Length: 336
Image 1 (cartoon, rainbow, N blue to C red):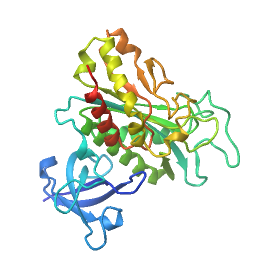
Image 2 (image 1 turned 180 degrees about the vertical axis):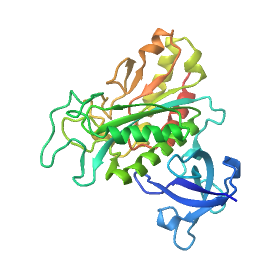
Image 3 (image 1 turned 90 degrees about the horizontal axis):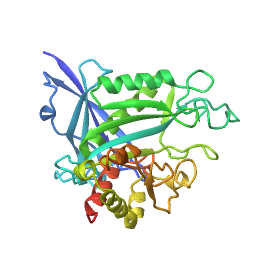
Image 4 (image 1 turned 90 degrees about the vertical axis):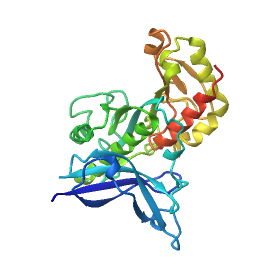
């Protein structure tokens, strides 16, 4: 008889930014398959998702991955349901309109790696600042690079968990890093970002670090953190038409504010029109333009307008489920 540890992961009801919660369920002779993960429950009154008088919320397993850091362990991503089985108001995954997985997403997750002793990013001295931006991006060597051991271990954990992990790099500011994930299907893409974030946050417990997802934690002349969303559907991947691409981009213009509403709290502090961003109140798109709201990759153009688009506005603290759901709705509204 064997026992397995299933770590159920879900999103709480805190606003404006939801947090991850998790707890362990021990199962005997578990098959490792999603269909054999049972529904579970938790105290929603402790997570801003229910009142004390009717506190039970349900956890519906939606994705499972081997847990690379625990013996006989699994990571179970779960949606939150009300006691009657309907999706909870905090459950954005259930609202995504992509049942046929036609939409593909590649998310670029930026974050700051923070020292718990100083509450500053790695590389920032107490009471001062490191040298200005310019030499940290994709740097190598102890003069400009901090946290590589941690980042490499996180990458290994994600790969061992079976996530479609695509890369890592140090970002423009000291202590700022990025990882990339890609998935065919919007819900799967969201699942994988949340599980990767879970592994990232759990790993900090060993190092004495914590992750700062705020889009602009260091004020002044420092880049903020985003979660750029690269996306495509069959039309974008196959149309071969500049006019179709422009029509899809134009569909984003009248709903720009609705996108910003779900692209992460405090994003206006990051989207200033500086540091490789468009201004939060503007909307623009352009080929290979990192200062635009939506960048049309040069590879897409060189392949005859067959490829994908990159929405550069989502913040590092955005919910990938909400980002994907909003992008899908807008793309489907395009008049093409």
